[in-house]
Length: 163
Image 1 (cartoon, rainbow, N blue to C red):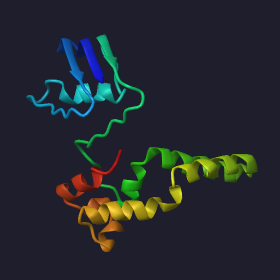
Image 2 (cartoon, rainbow, N blue to C red):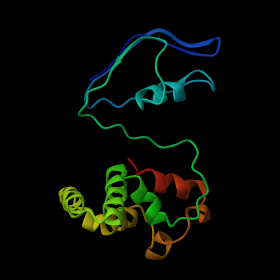
Image 3 (cartoon, rainbow, N blue to C red):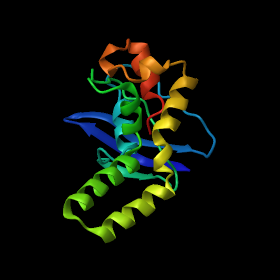
Image 4 (cartoon, helix red, strand yellow):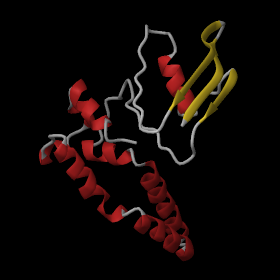
C-alpha cells in the first residue's frame, strides 16, 4: 500500500499540504480532485520521485508500478508508434546500451544486452505496440503519422499506453 504520513509540501511560501495523511490499498482506485493550484500535480510529482516532501513521509512499495497521463504532450514530429514505444523506458535504455556496446565493439556487453532484450521480448515490441494502438482504434496509416498531427483526444489516446 501507499502511505502518506504527516505529509507537508510547500511551493515557495505557499503550503499545499500540511500534516496530510492517507493510505491507498492494493486494488483501490483514486482520483485527485481540486481547484487549480491546490497541489494535485505536486502530489503526483512526489509519487513519481520528481520532488521531495518538506515534511512527513511517503511509503511506496518497490514492486508496484505507477502509470500516469501527462497533462500536456508536446507536438512531436516522431511517428505515433515510436512515441508509444518510447513509453517503455526499459526497452529504450537497453536499446541505447546495445548501441554503445556496438560502438565499442564489446562482444561481452552486446551478448549481455541481447539477453536482457530477450527477457523482455523486445523483438516483438513494434508488433505489440501496433496491436495495442489498433485496439484503441488507430489505423495502420495513423501509426506512422507524426504525433503533432493528432487532436488533443488522439494524443491522449497515444499517451494512455505509455508507462
